[in-house]
Amino acid sequence: MSRSSDHELRIAECRATAHDVFAALTRSAGAELLSLDLTMGQFKAMVMVTSAGPQPVGELGRRLGLSEPAASLLVDRLEERGLARRERDAQDRRRILVTATPAAEELAARLREGREGTLRAWLGALSDDELGGLTRGLRALLREATATSQPPADVGERHGAEPAHG
Image (cartoon, helix red, strand yellow):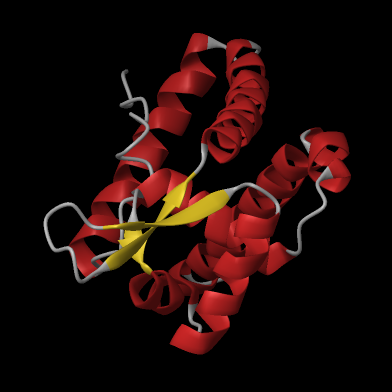
């Protein structure tokens, strides 16, 4: 087998394993996520507003790949559930911003803490060698990701995502 086919096999194995890890992480929050009375679009919008902060409806729509009218309807549904509200921008009184309510902030924090607790427990079960290898691999992947793309919004920044140490 050639070096390139070995490399392709490793890439496929890594992708499959990463998919399985993310699926397991999602399943670990399953009961709480399934108990939410939100559509996937409403959930994504709530996460975007709690993560990236107040934003105009049009910007929220762009981040979610929606037209402004569709985003406006989504915000209407979040308002009905007490998870978002529209407020005038203090800097530009002509603009209306979508903001998260305290209920949305609490829900997002609870979901995030559950996910982070699960991940912390899984990482705690690894040996020092395994943690070192995983950290090196993730740093290399992050280096490549930041060199090749600029994400539309750093959703981890607002809530103080923990930096990697190792």
